[in-house]
Length: 583
Ligand SMILES: [Zn+2]
Image (cartoon, rainbow, N blue to C red; front, side, top):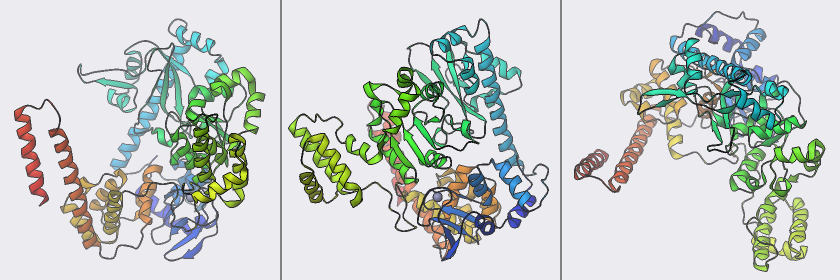
């Protein structure tokens, strides 16, 4: 849904961000901004800030950010349209007719078409599943896996028949273009033959549904043991796996005590079948901060229930730290005998699972045990190695937490607790404690420091926002071509068109991810003094970096084997040009 710009401007000015936010949290002034403990993630010292001049909010802890509209979306768990309606009601404004901004309209219309296409595809797969002949392989598989009619309905499962064009024919007949189907990830393009074909064939289909009920993409599983076992929709204009969790939409309007994090669709469904209805899956990625933030809006406690072999991996441990960094309480469930969650509940039922959950490890206990991975604790050398690493970790914890973990290491190794404490003290807690520090508001958590390039891009945008001369210069220099962060690039282009652009109004139209990226501009709000000079500086830096990247790429190609004499010559010439341009 898109709204006329003038109406949206009025909506924003009638919903002054400070007054809206103040109805949720107490804002305290400090510097050019107002601060509070973030209502979107748990914390005890304020890292949530609102800029009254820019009418934008940004949290240094969880990086949520945007205009008053994105704030309401996050707070009230609303879609964009719903949040706008909520604010219109608050301000006593009538909802308007459609917008006049053509480009925005086209983009939204395209996305809506993709949502319609994925929905139509889900319907097609379901119909194939129920088709007496076409769907038999799928139904046999479902029966064998205990997927009842209720489960099929609840999760919207379907079957993609073994055909290269079944879906393509059906959806093009319904008026979808091939481009739309390709963009939605439903078709695949074959370069060699210059033709398109169905992305999923002869597979069980698991629709991936967003928290607002839209079909975003699909997971597809083979019915036998062939490879690849799963195919998933890649990133499309409507789906990014890093921002979503499978199964979360089922809980949109529920109050939950906790959520259980598993790895795949079958784990979510398997647990559901057994009566454990609050599992969600990360869909084959290491946990991301966006996912953690999404979880934080639903619950305070997350149980990790990964397969035995996956749980000890470093990626998992990092994921757990991300969850903790977002203020979530994290527990780890481990399954005996290398069982996965689905297998475990099939054997031991809900009551067995509940028992495991009651005995779930704390994050620190889990970490201590992880140090023993790959070591044999009945071997004395390994035992020492384990104890030294684990003690260094324990020494890095809060003093009152340490006792129980030294005790755990003692139980695992047979060493005396006193000896372990001495060992820990000696190591001085050299392992950096991964627990979030909440000392200063500017302390970012569990977050790689910004890359120099991102900072330069951000500074350039900050300069253009305060100084039209900087924007004019950036435009002459085609600075947008040097910017890699998409939302920044788009903002710069928008500034070319309207150098006086109001940030909050601009952000109000963006989707959540882009709004958050643009809101990071609030991080160094007020740091830029001379807009034009800063812009010149930043553009010079970005250009130098781009030149260096191109040079490295050329040099890398030069070192490839099997280059012909001509290719080598051509590359050398290009490299020379690059080096000259750098001077
Ligand atoms: Zn926050």
